[in-house]
Length: 275
Length: 310
Figure 1 (tube, each protein chain N blue to C red):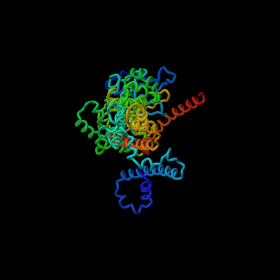
Figure 2 (tube, rainbow over the protein chains, first blue to last red):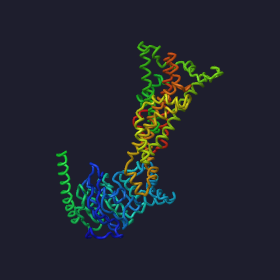
Figure 3 (cartoon, rainbow over the protein chains, first blue to last red):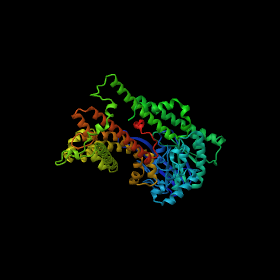
Figure 4 (cartoon, one colour):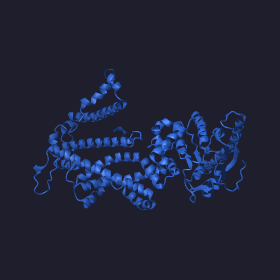
């Protein structure tokens, strides 16, 4: 897909960002620009991976799209409507455990439904169904601290899916897991998503993860975060990580990212020298 | 009170595993660890008592000034005589009309305990409400927080005259003292707990469509409860200290008043007897609060920070 930043915002697109920028602590001496001039469209049902060095503003973009923070400049639309506040249609999944420790697994999954005011029986049924989809139906009455890290993230995915969101925003959701669990979780995520039809914006700094999951990979530059390159990945899933196309793609992304990491390091060194 | 004989008991069981192995294997691990902790508590107190008794035996501790435990705990009926709860200052009341010595001890202990818990409950409810309000309504916070911060380092002792001016004598000034001693710290602690709630939890609730009010009710308050209960347990000891100070003045009767009486009549035995009583009460009330914590806050791992040793 060729992207034209001047293309008008279409209500068929899950997300449309036009010239989005964010300056943290604007107007103070600690102000720093996290994002600048982001133009990005995400089609309905598309899986877009945001790839970049740490601290490049990828997560900031997710928060802006979720509506948790307002952009300093530019506009974000969700199916044609401007994003002004958080909405259950856009679910956010975090890197670290974000389950409420005082609620059972089932109550955690049903949390959004109870905020919405669903009756208790309907909530429990929906929680059971969502947990069944992530393969944890038996854990419905367990406590979050009785589960492993991978299981907790699956519960977080179930909680997000229970709201039947049109867009899933995932902020390095598997970064805290070990490599084997992470690979399992990626397969599982693709299975679950196929059934839900939601679009996904997935932040990671792992090239392997991007290659395994994405329809398109958006490579970020650092400080401020800008889009450096958008790489389509037109391969069917599940993908063999050692297939020639995947290896080629990995090399391409590694090189794109390396120059950014080098630049970030050089900047930090210069900063340390002057400071 | 534990003597040397009971203190040695847990050590002996541990030293002879073969003798105790069969029944111990069937004990649930929870009971076993509880018994083990109890054993160490008894050993610790026993050691302290032993050192004191030895000091007395070799003549380092003058029994007139530092009477060892077997003296001040040896004649409890004699000590109980001093716990006079008769309303002596009222005209037309005969001092002999008061309750029996043991009844007077029970009334004294109960009324001091009641003051502690009444003050603790009022302070907890009030300070959590004010702390949450400070963060919830920005204007309220801006108007009250500086004053609260200003008043929090003031020693509760400084409030004693105020308590008497405002409430005269009786239960009210003692309870007021406990409340005032805890209130400011607990408000500041509530605020700092609120500021430290995991942002992810708040953001999850917000993306699920929770309003600000819902975020406070469903996320922030449950998230700060565990730390607040620990703060409450720490402050429980503070309120035991403050209530004694309050009772040394115009309260009428209470453990603080007994200590004051002991001071005025130069009765070290009575002082140490009362100290032992207070220690026991503080220990018991902390244990009770811990049981509450276990029931109410089941998701919190059970180690109360600094208080774990108790």
